[in-house]
Image (cartoon, rainbow over all chains, first blue to last red):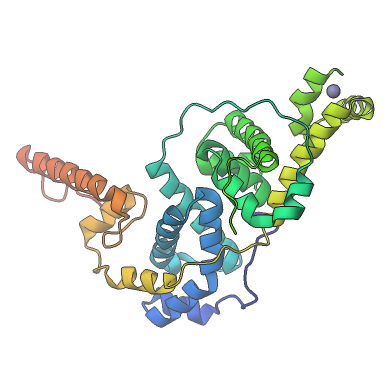
Length: 192
Length: 133
Ligand SMILES: [Zn+2]
């Protein structure tokens, strides 16, 4: 599960093997430097996947606590960022799975033709994130994993433990739903 | 290809999963059907927007690193039983269990206590059936 183009939200270098070993051995300052280095990546991932700040905070904390437990197992066969991205993703998905039952798939209204690009040019990312947060989790998770993080359908099916056909259907409906929300305003509150 | 079929395959086209023959049919349909062309454009745009969102970082709430550090400090060195429970509950160690699953944690503890009690009652030999750590 390694996205082709891993988002890296900082110009800071990866933690050194020495830092990683120190953090794994219980050096809290070394671990804190890793938290500060990766909090943007993890929090953004959690927010994109879970759609609200309360869950994003809880899930991000869990991701870092899990990192602390597993740090000693990092062997350097991939970059630290790649390794931790996968670990954090699994932690966030596990978090989501504990609290949210997958329900019946909601209906998607019939699409109306309208260019989304114009909406985006006007309102930007905040609007996209609100529309994304507004999607049912059944759609949002597979959609974000597929179109935002670039995972393959098979990888998403494994990560979410859902059948391949269901994952595809959810991504497809998620795209349509997102597009409709973007073009319609989707009941979004306009912020000043 | 008619509009109904076109709408059915539009997402597979976006995902690059249509075979070449179908792609030709699909594109031929779009060349004269403005509705389907607009549909494709809209969905492809939504996808492109998400791809672009990769570059965006959400602001991390103030004090986040402090709270992670505090949660870590609050964790006692886990006992053998706690490590086993952490494995059973997906790697969450006590000390910073998200509030909504604390009760769930109690159920797990209660269940573990019952299992241990039953093992004692039905006289396992010492060392048998214990949780390996
Ligand atoms: Zn058509």
